[in-house]
Image (cartoon, rainbow, N blue to C red):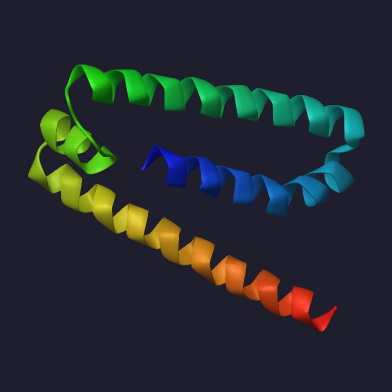
Length: 100
């Protein structure tokens, strides 16, 4: 799951970085990119540490252990929506690339 998280973040950066740089400028965009990258790295590191301390192999196990069944179902639904969004964006980009 951590690998999927990193790939999703990388894909998101590839999609949004050119747009954000045109809207904020190169210097401010780069600073915001560094801040967001360091926050993602920090939260991913925390997640791995907590998961290893609790012998959980994925996000769902961690959510189930700390928050219970209802939150686990909510988490799975949100994760499904994010994955579907990533697939839709990927399909749209691949169609755009095929046109070019």
